[in-house]
Length: 69
Image (tube, rainbow, N blue to C red):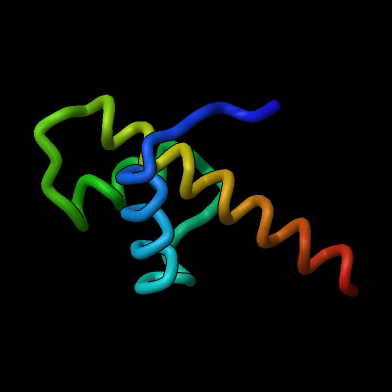
């Protein structure tokens, strides 16, 4: 079972990954700094959730690419 995340977090995360596919990595701290610079959020908690979900998306994409090769 995975973690439950609000649809807002997922939507913003997917949009950011689609717009900047090469900027995000599997490093949470780097992703958090990048999210802070790209969007304005009033809550650090939301920023962390978005960065965490982006980290999972990038890791899953890399894993999928490794399985293909």
